[in-house]
Image 1 (cartoon, rainbow, N blue to C red):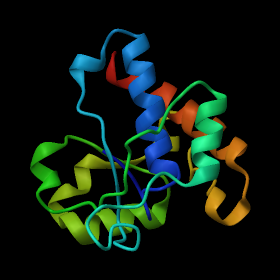
Image 2: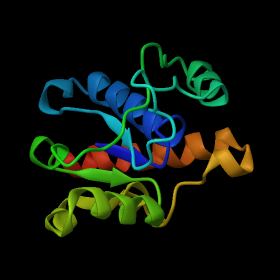
Image 3: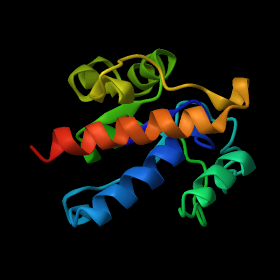
Length: 150
């Protein structure tokens, strides 16, 4: 489960990129791949907001579709369904622990921890730089897939 604040930029990008990588590696049947938000701001009303247009655009530039992806909020029941909660930044980690409780600590990590440059994924919501966010997420997903398939 990839997690960010609103589930309209970084975490859906990670979900879509990782799913594509797993499919290309013929390993998609080994994973349940999803993304969610720690906030409810993009899921109020039940249907969830679609992927943010600039995020859709950068994904499309790389041949990936976000069609059908809508924002959902992380819920406590997700703790039993998913083995890992991969967060885009430290604030997301705190949100995950708030929602899932202290028992999730061993299941929570940062996406960039699977790269040679640990830290937060650049947040395009504030910077407008979706190319850097895409690059961070792609690198993190690549490292994560390598970690999981060893």
